[in-house]
Amino acid sequence: MAEVKEKKPHYLGHRKRLRERFLKSGGKGMEDYEILEMLLFASKPRSDVKPLAKELVSKFGNMAAVLSAPPNELGNLGGMSDGAIASLKVAREAAVRMLAADIEDKPILQSWKNVLEYCRASMSFNKTEQFRIFFLDKKNKLIADELQQEGTVDHTPIYPREVVKRALELGASSIILVHNHPSGDPTPSKADVKMTEQIVMAAASLGVEVHDHLIVAGKKHYSFTSHGLI
Image 1 (tube, helix red, strand yellow):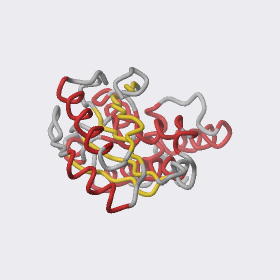
Image 2 (cartoon, one colour; image 1 turned 30 degrees about the vertical axis):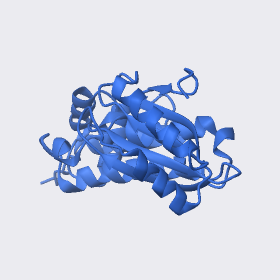
Image 3 (cartoon, helix red, strand yellow; image 1 turned 30 degrees about the horizontal axis):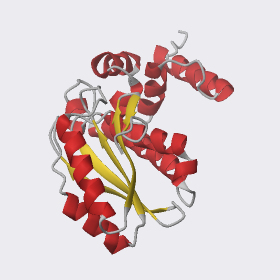
């Protein structure tokens, strides 16, 4: 009696073809869900992850939002194990670190595009507001990049005195303020404008310049300096 060969799962051939496409194109032209599939391969070696990857994009909107989603929200989807969540979070952290490296040891004001890309990657798709500050030396090179506060979906408590105190501790000559709007609209609120004015005044009194205050929201951003508010 002839031996019956066990049929291989269909997704194994799909994975092989997807890897070949990626290696050939470098990922160009591939859909978000396809990249997510590849990120999930290692954590889910014995299942078809295409439906899960598509569900992730459908729920969160795009790959950037998926990678930035809180672990508990990712875990609410069936099939998202701790290993799968970790795979996505590692990919996000790697991307953020690569972008952070692009603004280190360089005059930040001459690397503005890199600054925006880093801020978007690290903050734009967060579900709560975060406030970070870039502390710069006399040559506008980065001394420190610090996340100061994390608040609610529409508010982050920031105290001008603490911002200036930290700048003096680090010996910073200037700073750039950055925070995100989870709503997707980067337009500053009245509270944002007032808080910025207070920080600018407090900093100026001690010889620290505020170059800009950036608000990032999804793929959009708002610059206080470009709009004449600083």
